[in-house]
Image 1 (tube, rainbow, N blue to C red):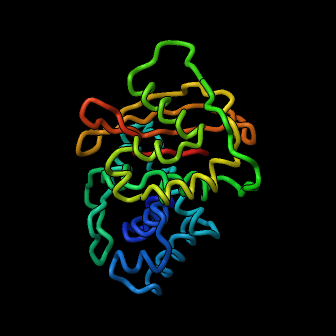
Image 2: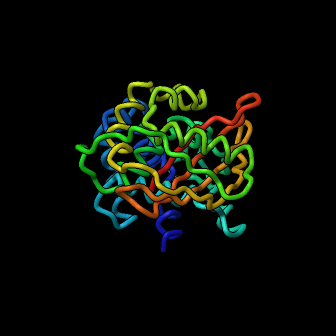
Length: 250
């Protein structure tokens, strides 16, 4: 069962898989953690074995899905809150808090974008031309300020306005992802999906986490090349505005 492999993973293995979601490869993970590439590869191999998958990216995606699914019980919530500190020789499981860098930093380009797209979506041809017009996808009923902010940002993405959509993200996002990185990855992954023809609000929930918590908004969206897709937008309060710090398509 999923909970069994999650409990079987050590915190070091989880840490390594989370770095894949943030866009790291084995060499950059080794530099980031001050370890050898051999040690990183050993961690990934052990994680793949415990999770019964053949790909480290698939393992990272599964871990991401497990740690970001809404908790259905106190037991699930307790499992999520398993330790994130530096484990000792026996792999201690000390209580932790959500790290804003994990939830927000680089949450789309080179992180959530990679988690949901490079890890979850199958490759799509890149020869299709971008959408020229910005679709107007109006909600059927009044929605919260958070949902409206998410829709406004998605409209920029739908219009392939990569620079403006990058400028409208939160500071944690921009700190880890340059405008050039965001534009390049968006062209590779978002453009082939084509126009967003319908976008319906699925849910909105609060994710308590330091420093101020996050709002997670989910839409069911139909793209020209991929109907019935779930979009997840994570937002953080920035002064009087809500800024996007995470985006998943998958």
